[in-house]
Length: 383
Image 1 (tube, helix red, strand yellow):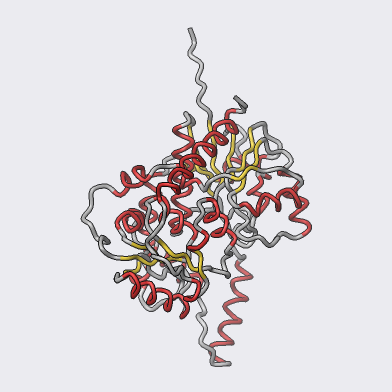
Image 2: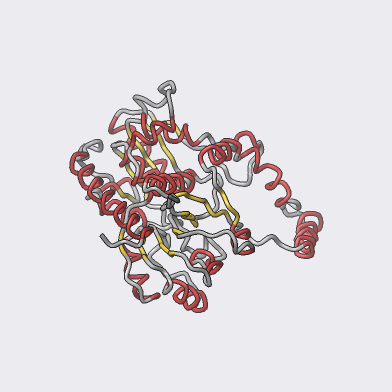
């Protein structure tokens, strides 16, 4: 008798994987959650930026040459070429993690061109894939490239990144039409519930970020057996340095009697020495949260992993990148007092005092609800 294979082929449509730890780990966690539900999972990779034409690059070079040699401005003529050459060095560790943990990566262009490559479902999410500023081909984030194909369309915890509407009228209408074809819609932030309803006319479900679908032990297995590096220390993971954040760090350090070490390097495109901008391994990043006694950050996913590993933390509002993401996350666990803008906002009580028993109980309940949503969305079964 012929055996029927009920395994579903599920694609994950997320932001391109590069040196963003949160972006890598949310894709990894969603992949693992879907695999544990019995699915065969593919990561759909796509180019987020359109390559400029040769003529466009020539115009840039001429303009910069004039600025540099005639106007005596400090500009770099061949900046794009240098960045492209340096990227494999900067991303060597994160690329190794991606190669080790994402075995089924398929290019979006292949799916568009090869109709024989079929998927049973595509899950869009998570992270800020619904933010046009971060994902320029926004129609792809609403599965425009498979709009005529028969498959289940699901959004799992995508984020707009902010509570302000950043879509043009044309983008809004296009994405509204595409979202109308989705079988199940969920979002990561509470503010996004109203944004989806108001702009797209769809009801959505509020779910956890994918990284919270896994247990701390799952991430410790990724870290492996390593020598303790961060015990009896605090860590900082700050994306955008400022004088205000330095004041907060100094105040927290003085109040709790703890020295802090940075978990990240500045991996921007500029700097005198490319080796100083190499992104540390993902395993090291996770190790920091597993071992540290306290965390100071302005990053959403650093906030998430502080909660997962039950580490007391302070998150500094990052208005440039959007604070609604932090507010929504902290509200879910009754930790709103952990979000500060300046030194005067720091809680007056013991900075290390967090009721982790209550937080963990709430997390377990939300985890079960979120996994249940994902399972039903992919299978199409309501019970």
